[in-house]
Image (tube, rainbow, N blue to C red; front, side, top):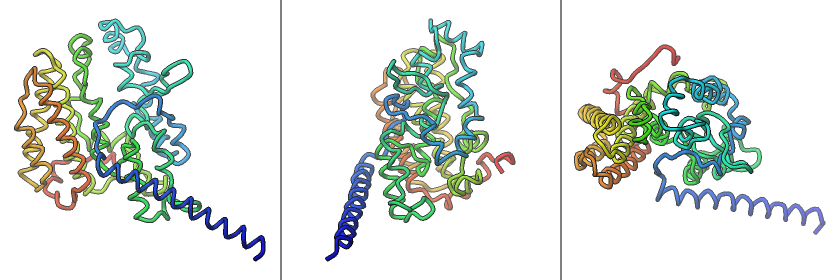
Length: 347
């Protein structure tokens, strides 16, 4: 046998081995995801943040949209606003960009040799999770020469599951996205509200309308060319997922309340409102998860000193929300169309 054939055979064996390692890695992560796919939304870990620069190579169109949004512009603008300065003064905060309770929702931090430093406003990793542990999984389409467009459906399913297991909040599951929004649009800090005078959250927040306008970046299906409008089926699932996520976040907020003041009262009212909206949904469409969410809510008391029960209910509702988004068929929710916000500016 010639040396050329020997080396060619060894190359084939090595390529096959590498393919097996990649696939086994995906399968292992998928196994983890199946048992613990859902997790509560938390601020991005600075030690795992890579920054938007790590995303721009494959998502240039998305990053360009982001740079024009209030999410990005807050980096240069928030600390200059009179209202922000007043809140900081009431709390004795000298620098908004160096205060964890402000940074958690308004900025993105990254670990530097000198410590954790703010590097941008609300960014890719604020919503999709710090990317150090999942970035390589996320853009591995199945081997050399395989692109996102030529990736097999089986590999795509494995890749997404592996990325989620590694910490990515992938928009394949709309509940993960709704959670990311409501983590900050429902304030989880009693002192910030009652002492600082910060709002209790975006009380008019609605997931469909707030995600499909200025910040929409649906370029994936067109390979970066078109910021596509989500399908009616996807918007229906989004509509319900947003309500469930708002109920989860509101229950977590009530659990943190220690006094019947602005923070706790607003959180309780918001939880009751989200539950009422879900009851209206349940009267119009059939969804086992929505029914189960309402059952959990009905078993918990919206009162002070009930943190353990409220937090446990929020955990249950969060997992049900994830399962809803994972299993829901938007084609079955047509009855909701006249209630879902729409706008010509989305088109």
